[in-house]
Image (cartoon, rainbow, N blue to C red):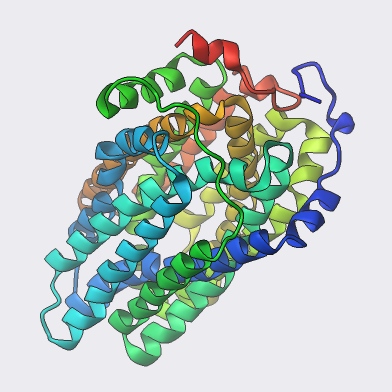
Length: 435
């Protein structure tokens, strides 16, 4: 039965039995096992690539900012077009092809290091290409999930996907830190390359046929990419979600560009300590995947989204506050990671469910692409802007501005149509026909 705006949180059916039912299905287990391995690997390279630049090549704030900007640029250039392409093709073969490409790209880092040919330019190029595939992968993956689990089980399916990501966030950074200290950063990247190969193989092993797509959208992919942007900007519920994604990526640019440099150079933490910190964030994400539904049942989806944003903004203040000896600095960052990722993942799970619930199947790729376009645009501005600010005034000021901006964003969100929602609405066919 479709859920409407007037429903009450306590009327929501529990998804625990649905989640257990999904885990009993062979294809879902196959999908999630590959996802766990891939998520562990992706966390290794997410921190490992900038650490390779910092420790192996002596890169400073400008260099790591350029690398971070390279990870955002593809979202600006490719995401809307990737969304249009996703709506014209079967999605699982696309995911397999992208996993295979990431395997080959990441494999080049340890190979070039072994040959003593690794440079910042190669790391920037690999970061850019892997990030571009990652943007397209996320768009395609979120469009594929409703076909894999069924629209009636979207909340449960997304909780399992985010739980798999949380396992990766929990295990990957600690593995990364240990590998970097024991074998060097380039060798750690090899494990992510192999993880992508495993992900491709598990996707290939799924037996459930992907439902045939409806007739491809009329017109060329370029105008269709614009349709996705227009849909996001015109829809009364998608527009606030896109605003949050864009602005949070703007302020998140400080963390994307400067966090590793801040921890290693300013606070003098070791790579292993940094890995443990990020692992605590994964633990927070894992907890949130288990409690997300209870939070929504208690507060309603709008308030749950708002509260999670407020908590994220508040604990973000702990990052610039961190100073003093090892344990004081480590504790401040540990709390920021644990509570920030816990609240942030609650937001991400419910934002994804709401967006998928609103959007017809034939529009999922374009809407996801439109959202990622704004994430890439503002993320790029944030990484470059905060990198320059850090060079001029220091990393602490950059983090203070980012934390304050996220708090103001949460306060704004409280007054939006999404902030007042009780439950996700059903597929909004009428709104998309008018676009």
